[in-house]
Length: 118
Ligand code: SF4
Image (tube, rainbow, N blue to C red; front, side, top):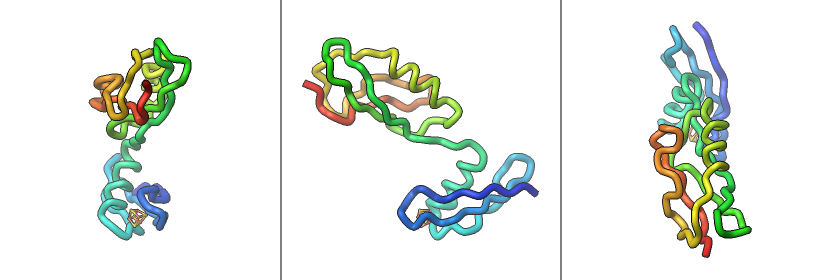
């Protein structure tokens, strides 16, 4: 049986997780102090996901716009997702929380403005 070890990044406690895998499936998680950590360990061991935060360049402003994904996206798609964000130039004004890209790279996650750009 394979084992993978992680530090849980969901809260400051930073629990050390040991995930046991069989045939590519997580079968147990040791070391988690809560269910959230256990779920994180299972996901991280099989298909890691991350919320992507970055800057976009609006079409009609010099100031960049800070954005983030509305949900975690597969870690293996981070570069492709970032490239789509960099290649998109939304028109200001852009209110905080507005969707500037729908369904980023087919992940189902939207890209949201995290600031007002007037
Ligand atoms: S397992 Fe739970 S308590 Fe431990 S770091 Fe993760 S979220 Fe925090």
